Amino acid sequence: MNFHKIVKIVTGILGVLGIVFLFMVIGSGDEEVKAAAAMGDYSKISPLITLSQVILGIAIIATLVFSLLGLFSDKEKLKKALFSIVGLLVVLGVAYATSEGVETPMKDGEVLSAAGSRLVGTGIRMFYFLAIIAIGSMLFASVKKLIK
Image 1 (tube, rainbow, N blue to C red):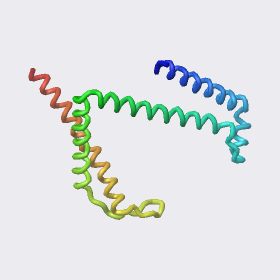
Image 2: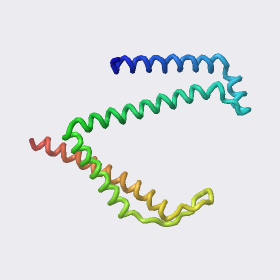
Image 3: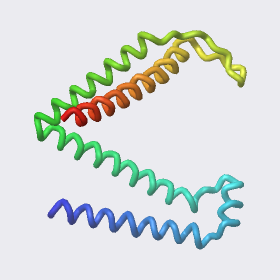
Image 4: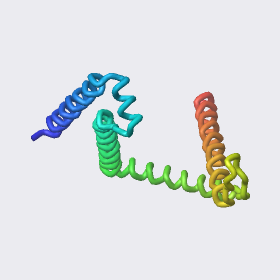
């Protein structure tokens, strides 16, 4: 059986299930669903949520599989991807090395640990570094294009 036929069949089945679950919820009415939810009965909504989670899971798995297959099918793409990953790890390392951690009291009375504070600082610095790199590369490409 052809892969595209399988995808069409699975898509059709999931679509029909979604329509059935939607009509179950709509047929119940807003007030009945709210009243049931207030008493802890989520039986009308649960199938729709579960179906959504299954579809999201399938989409994530399919995206990862086909991305990796495309990546491993071409040596040049794999080389570029590994270079990009190493570059991102270098930026992460620099951001972590330049961050400091200080115990910080929060509004809810909890205390953010020094390690947690350092991770927050790392995220902020990494954002700034990546923004500077992106702006710099756009400027470099523009100047290079003007020179040509």
